Image (cartoon, rainbow, N blue to C red; front, side, top):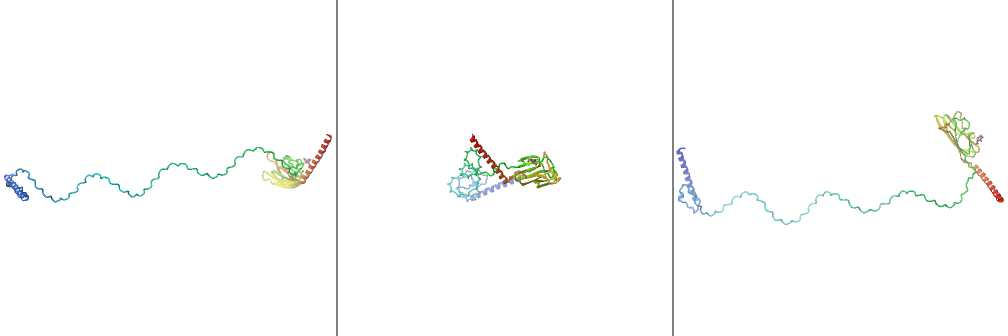
Length: 320
Ligand SMILES: *[C@@H]1O[C@H](CO)[C@@H](O)[C@H](O)[C@H]1NC(C)=O
């Protein structure tokens, strides 16, 4: 830097500083009207400032300034201490009832109840077992005598026979001889003639069961030479059975037999191992006249006997 310029610069600085000094003195005298401050003449000399003087007496406090603008609100302070517990309030109104709770656990079984009234009467039971047989009772009183019996016949009126064949295919139109005797009560069936001969007059039953084989069978029951019933069996297979039966009123010495009534139709069969042909007859009941006569004869015999007995006893008594 050239010297000329440096000189100019110092001049300007000094001038500036002096101006400021002067101005500040004037200004301070007009604005600060404190009586204590007396501007020193020496002070007016604008030179280099001296050291700071001692502090002045404190001035009278100024009047309070106008209220400043309201500052922004500060931060919240810390919570205060809890206050004292207040008095108990009045009882409030009762609330609405709550919802129904869940059902509880099942309780224990209760104690047995009292005995009930007796039931209805039961049905009648089944009868019990039969008791043991009691002891035999005492003999009862003798009863009064009964009425006299009806029939007092001497000989019993019995007649019955059943006979069987022992040959096949008998000769036609002649009495058939049944040789095997199953029963012949009274012997009224004559095996040598093949005829039943009535001894006791009465009503008789006759029947026949004839096995048929290989031929037709035309058989009839004959009473005193006359056919009473006939049976015809046309043999259509191997074997068959022809039968017939009737009831006849017979007199004493009447005759009854069986006979083939057609030539060549004598298919009566017999086999000792598996089939028979039979002829049967019996007395159903005897004629009453016959029974009465028989009774009369029997009583007559009894009377004779009794008379003989009495005579014998007398004789015995006289000569004993
Ligand atoms: C059987 O008949 C024959 C001939 O008529 C006779 O001689 C015989 O005495 C009879 N028999 C009986 C038991 O009646």
